Amino acid sequence: MTPAALQQTATTGPTLTVDVTAVTANVRAIRRLTAGEVMAVVKSDGFGHGLADVARAALAGGATRFGVTSLEEAYALRDAGFTQPVLSWLNPVDSDFGGAARAGVEIAVPGDAHLRAVARQAPGARVHLQLDTGMARDGAPPEQWESLCHTARRAERAGFVRVVGVMGHLACAAEPGHPANGRGRELFDWGVRVALGAGLRPRDRHLAATAATLSDPRTHHSLSRIGAGLVGIDESGSVRLRRALRLTAPLVTVRTVPAGTPVGYGHTWTSPRATRLGLVPVGYADGLPRGAGERALVQVAGVRRPVVGRISMDMTVVDLGPDPAVCPARAGDVVTLFGPGDTGEPTTADWARWVGTLEHEFVTALGRPRLRRVVIGHGVTSHGVTGQGEQAAR
Image (cartoon, rainbow, N blue to C red; front, side, top):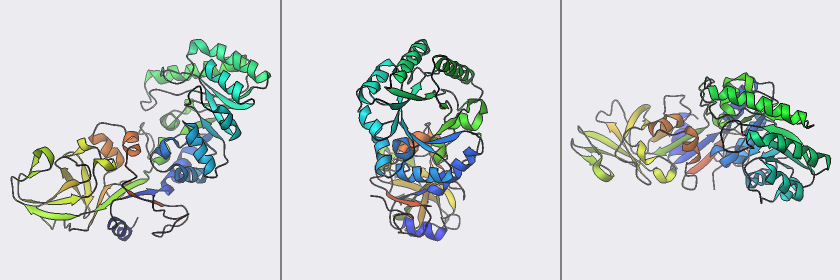
């Protein structure tokens, strides 16, 4: 966004801008690294960026299908008009698998109970058998895998299911050299051999999510599941992706205070010198972590300035410094709390680091009901355009 556009946006109040061209660029960059298909994992409302917006941008970058955790997310994609294959993989055993099959949703099967439920409710449903490759979380334990494959083959011959995929997940892909990754790869390869030995012929074989896709070609199979990478997050640090989010807000007030002035709840920070304080109308109800106070930085008037005192529910105080020549900020000026980092502003990775959490957690916790939300990049970028350009949020 241009400085003028930022100024116009910020004066309307706190605004979360989603640049979906970043999503498209990220998918294109990832596709250059793998010969397989890209499944765009748009769970958790597209990692907090908007399910339909991220899905549309991912398709523009070359993704061919979608992954979600819940059937509700799968139905949301269908309701938004997406006809591409959708896989859902975290569903209770009493889910409406019949409804899923009628919507053309493929279903992950982590064990015999789910297989029986799918076969009973949705004859002919397309399923992906899910193997636990080292997380003790989702997927069939290795000791149950051979039995699951043979049961699935019998169900397939009877016409109850169609096994189209085998899937796993790596626990330590963000650390490319971790020995658990080698064990996970070996276990997945074994799992595929067992499935083939049972007479199954799954076309889709997928182990890698974002970090593994970017850092280890040995994890690439017929497709890769890209979730966080869609929005610019790569825990492995192996590829520079572009972040899609920017949060801006206007300075409500600027005041000069003397040395020794305590700020905010609990008086956790006291000004060591006379300085100017700026008030920003964004807080922890909008998703800023309360614990980031006094570690976080924001950008205002082209320079980074520190957050001081505790972040409140709906406001944050920034130390602008004593010298207006260094930081010539005035009430109404734009504050960039985070962005892609192009002009030195903090990023969502910085905020996550300041509180010792994952960037994934930070972006999915942002409070959209209170933040005006604008989407740019769907062909038109003029302010206020709806439909294919910028979209003001609900």
